[in-house]
Length: 286
Image 1 (cartoon, helix red, strand yellow):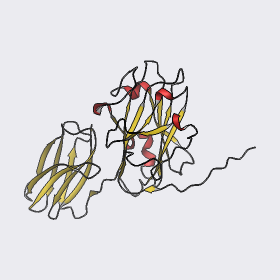
Image 2 (cartoon, rainbow, N blue to C red):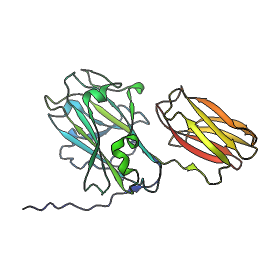
Image 3 (cartoon, rainbow, N blue to C red):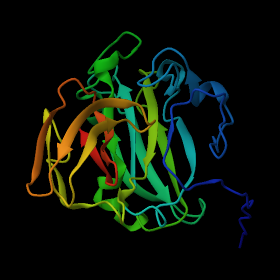
Image 4 (cartoon, helix red, strand yellow):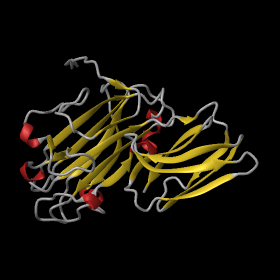
């Protein structure tokens, strides 16, 4: 018989909302490349393309041999103490030919990497659809070729939504027929932790729908007092995308329809901020 010895390391735990867009020098705290035996044939930081900021991670497919596997692991995220938290990322990819067999797998672990469960497995055709399609030339995505994937909404991830230490693994396998295909880019790893309604919110029956939303989102609630307030939309970094001053009247239902046509796909927060009222809801723009 044989015994496999695993080194025990301390994985940092992210216990509040955070977005990683790879602007700092890699590796950031908690991030790792566990099989980095050939650095040129692995995940690499680049400033060629990004969906947010100036940098992203990518697989340089044109130098990847047949069947090469590259693994990128995240820090641990605390879903247990952040009920309703979301996890998403953006990617861009083009396959070199219609027969390219590149594959991306997303796995999750709740025991510090001791075991992993596959959440999503995507073929080259799935990844390139709506992104870079088929390109023989080296793929460099434009702003419209980044796709959003919402991991927390996948049914295979449900068991992880109440766990205190969830690690995510991005596993890219190069084409198994010829190798040396095209590029895959990864950016905006987003752990969003909505606050929900505060206990002293002074708002009743707050609803925002549809969610996910496309061109517009509808907001409705019943104020319990008269006051002036702001309706805001912010991004995960806290930047205010939209702000409007409104007068709340306790004798009538408040409704508003917000136009989202100019927003890029991603996660946003809808806020109601008054003198005594405050609420925060997460929504997704498709």
